[in-house]
Image 1 (tube, rainbow, N blue to C red):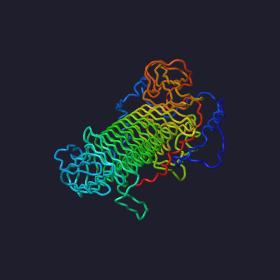
Image 2 (image 1 turned 135 degrees about the horizontal axis):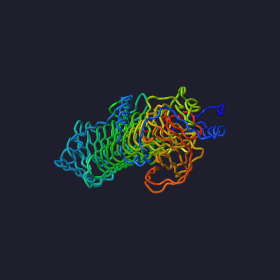
Image 3 (image 1 turned 90 degrees about the vertical axis):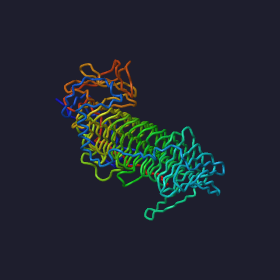
Image 4 (image 1 turned 120 degrees about the vertical axis):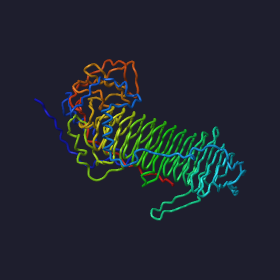
Length: 628
């Protein structure tokens, strides 16, 4: 006779939701509830299956291929990806197209019409188009188009460009400008300016904490006051920086490099340190190449701020080496944040990468070494590259801000609370937001998060690539969390964390999934193994933190095969990367249960708690004044 254990409980009082990012996070005490459920039910290992299984017939590979950079997918998987891409409601910019003019690429100093040499409290001008304004500051005013070669040093000077609707080319040939009460370079021009950093030269721009602003405007509606210039290197119109020299910008007043139009960095070794935003472009910021280091003491690292324009408001990193250390977001954009190449290293007290709309990682290397939330946007698309995320809250978070109103039909007490498959929940706990999506179809993603590992206020889909999630140790978050549907449609996925609020993919997924809930916590570094009855290893993995829930999906999980989970063993020889182990030998270990795959979702274990979808991502914290 079987006994069904159905716990009855009453929750009183107000449920505290995860809403504001910097408030303490309290999801209902899932861990205590899990212990209550566990204590009242049998400890017999359950083998539960959900959904129709796929017909995968590959042998196990032990994960040996999954930390490589291969992005090859099968024809069947490619068709699945194409179908999902077609179904996306994505009117956003799908692919950044940035044109580079001949002027953007012009670096030659040949035929320069004027040479400017700063010498302490004076400047020598040789040529046409510039004049010296000598007051308490040595100001060189440029009023005509052409090339200007600038060198020398001054402890209180400025290059001021006001050439109307004419393009100006500034060639920095070893210049150091400090300005006491304004921007060392103030481009108040009506057309684009190109700044070239001459090869093998060192150029430096510094300001002081006090500015005398040329422009002060107050918005009659909002009361917001805007000042110009507000950056050590300030441009009113489009600005391009090229060349292979170096440029150091230090602002004690506000922004480091500020452009109210389009900002392109073609090349060069550029180091920016600012009290507010390090690098800011209104229409967009594009980094084509170069070595960029940006440090923000109170603001964002690199950002674009243009709103209400489908073709602007983006940050695009096409190549180069980018290092950012920011007080707020490391990278921030309004419309689109895109990484297609290069090596990007980010550290932030707030988000590593944040976009109000769409965020794409197509290629390159992204390493978020410190963040509150690692990657945050309404839509997160990862199709390639190698991405590492370390977050004190969510690793990836698809959100449009705080959610309000009534909870969804499949809310906190729906879906997974008493649903099948042990303690893993389905559905979300807060209002479903269809505009929020996490889509991973390629690349390599490693997440170490104290909050939710992969979190979406809408749907979460893994259809390709390699995804490794070291999720939360606390029972108030999950390695996977979605207010909508979680789909494992392809690729290699291993997500571990606490079972308290754990979620699993839906039975409508297109690739088989093994879900394990262990009766005891696995310690950091301890090895688990999933072995096929043929003797092939599908997974040898050592988590970075304690955990007792595992979600594993791979194209190697075959219909009709039996799989056994082992814990407490040792692995010797072979290769290891990010906890994955292969081509070695597993020894010892204790069986934690087995399952024969006949459905999409196969469960090993006796549950251990888990509400529905957990809590959605919170809105961004109140931002500090931006001084723009």
